Image (cartoon, rainbow, N blue to C red):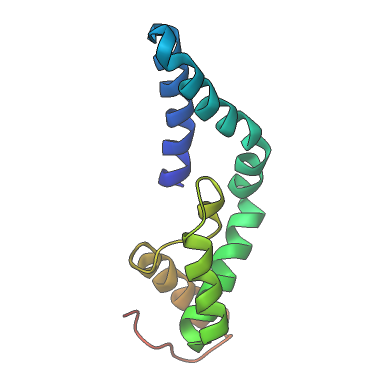
Length: 118
């Protein structure tokens, strides 16, 4: 969620930059701002708790199963341009989320033990 909050502040920063911009810089800044406005619906979608949980759960399944096709899909998502790269967490950022899913899986009786997050 921190990355997403940063994206919203990026848009606000662009709006402030546009207000103070030199005429020769306006077109480039307007293009960047239009990019964020165009993706506002996507940002709202990825912020939904149900969507965040679903993406995290799928990531955890990929992480714990070691499924190369699933892990490759996560890696591909991370290569996308902002804000589409928000579809996944990088592996380092995902470790605490994986640990929370490990605890939940044991607490819910889905598994008896989990492999420690690596």
